[in-house]
Length: 168
Image 1 (cartoon, one colour):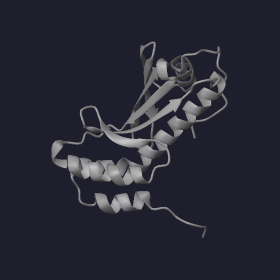
Image 2 (tube, rainbow, N blue to C red):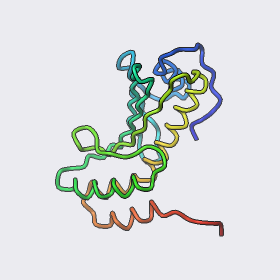
Image 3 (cartoon, helix red, strand yellow):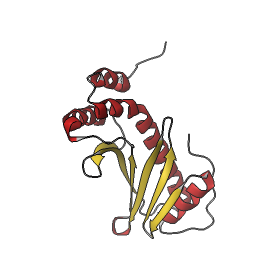
Image 4 (cartoon, helix red, strand yellow):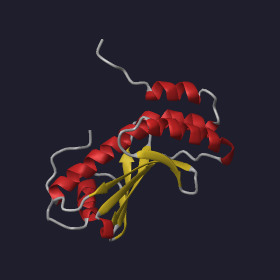
């Protein structure tokens, strides 16, 4: 789990500044694109995920997009779209789409941070990064199969979205 106690060095209206401090404290690779955007290499179980965070001040919204490094080619696009539809039906928070010219599976979520103190906002961002990594890890194999056009995708997807009820 990513969330750990973290103290901000200052209170700031721009959450990208606190995200940068948080990422530095984790030792993760990142690049600050501008005042309102940062890219982060988020460690996953099988690979690193490329996370883009973009602050939109007019809406007090922080867009978080976590991309898997699996390019879906045109021949397998329909299979990937069907997988996305089934996956998104089972997500409580965020959704997957194909980003970067309809090629890369990406988990997206937007946080509305109006009137949220920075100390709480950094916890919210950490939680969403944790959820993004968990969902990307959960469906990584599914998207690998979609990338390859492998018909075993449907079996893997059924197992990945299977929910248990009760305890054994």
